[in-house]
Length: 380
Image 1 (spheres, rainbow, N blue to C red):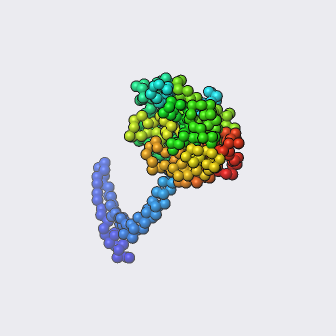
Image 2: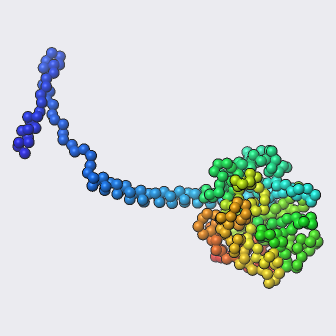
């Protein structure tokens, strides 16, 4: 130790400089000996710690992002439901699921969907003001508007979105058991399931005959849903509810749900949130009646959530071909009710409960083959 100190003193160098004519002695000490870098062991330990931190942080970030996307999806759905109720408040009725110009002697033309009707209540009044409601969505004025980007109409988890092109939609309204059509004989307003069966809802063997007997089917048809196709000005079909008509209770009746198989479609430029087509504007429950025949022995509400009519059954279907609740949430879908509250609905919900929640006036079906039981909040 003493020898080292001697060497250190001997290594001290002395220099002189002249400042203001005087000599100044400056001692320059040797630099302190500091070890640079770190050992391989320290580096490996540091890398291991960083790896552990990354392995913890990355899944946590992914879960946080997924949670944010789910929250946005629910909030958008809630905003859509609230906008629909605001439309009802102003017009004393709910909008049609879709409007068509459909005179008996002229080709049918698509006018617009419910999603156009409620634009002012989803902060899109500027788009609505440009819309020519007296023209079809295929017109030169309206077609560019069908590619508008409406943030409230999309769920971030919908992988079928356009990627910025516009026209997206992730939600559809409650159409009940089906829609109406005009048959080859020119008889209009005929109820049909989305699987293509003409519906004999009162089980009397009479369907779409053009006689007074059809009215019984139409009365039951209206009680089984909330939103319907209507004719724009000409065509004869006008059917709608208001929130006040929902005698089953607004907290126990579906209003709008997720459906990732609607909206933008790269194979058809006309398909967008504005498309009133029955397969792309509404969702339906599976028909409880075997091949559409609702006689006393042909009704089984278990069919309402089975097969191609089951919740989330159409996730791999082409766009616009699966008008049932569909989402990329595991195990079910988010559903907004007529009082605008949102609830997650299991994809395995009992068919009878699913059908009762879709019906707006199921309590008025007593005495028909489609009589429903009362649903309590514990059932779903």
